[in-house]
Image (cartoon, rainbow, N blue to C red; front, side, top):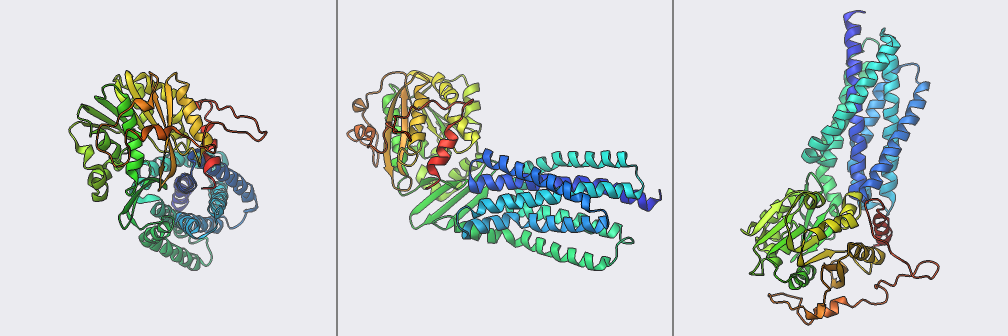
Length: 516
């Protein structure tokens, strides 16, 4: 084998690894897009992986028909992967903003299947070409497959630790598309003596590369304008942290915080939500000196807790440092939380709430669970009997716990399932709800080792909404929101606790909110 052939065969192995890296990045990128835009991360990743692998199978089958012009076939497959994959995130945001509901999901699954099919054609072609050059088939197949599988690992690590946090989903797609395109152009150059009309093919590749570079430089700004249409008010801050997409909007005096598209607070009425979250539990606890807040990285619940002079320590456990940093630096959030997270009584820990409760040996007089709704597996575990049992085990004998528990109106069965799950840990529970204009009717589950007499509680600190006389009214539920839920047969529906083994709350949540 001459030197030219050796260089060509070596590049084929390198190319198989590089296109594999690009393929796995596109696969996880599509999963991340589905999780962010469509919700339920486990469902979206499962569907994306299934469609991508099915596409690869279809592509591998179709590759049998590619017996001639292997190099040109490979080059144009890379052109298509670069073009389709590169513009995928940009197009997804545009379709979500301008198209009818459901179109975005159809587009995501179609583009996943298409890129998967194109990826499935790549390797068989490279293996045949390596064999054509003069490497034995067994050896070429093994080497190309090794490069492919090793490339898959590298692609996954690159997406998680570099592309997503540093470039975001739009730029990452354009960047990876450029890599696919450069592989194709390199093949054209290395095998130029074998390819007719090479200049034309090269020119087409350069035009596609130009579009991808323009997309990389300006696509994110345009996608930002698309995303703006998904929110009612103008976006004033947007970042993609290691864990989620964080967005602040502002219209007049109304500042709103969104995490992964879900509304977390509105400055016009957050006091209604946070006062009910904090003050009944603080009033129930005999001596609330040590308080634990799970979630609440915006610092507003902490502000309400710090109104009590007898509080000695407040431990706040929030997974995402980016949320806490924003709460400590953004003037709009600082106005709401009064700089609470910088208070000397605060101890902030960035850790998964489940893991924290497993590892800590501390006891708390009040535990406030202010976590996002259970719309995926990672959040569902924070609404299970196992999680609430851990919380109970760190609750002092005369302490109290409060859990935000979504809406008893919009997600009635979800709310009462959460209540049943808390009660299954042998804690006494009380159910409360309040109208928060930006959220709607919102529910909470209060729990204690001792029976709760809501009429006997007194609010002793300054508030804007909650009063001592108001508290009993928060426990009254109308017929369309109480726990007497009727099934399709007209029978009373029995609810069972949500557990790690049987995470049925996710499906209930998805069904409840699909029309809102």
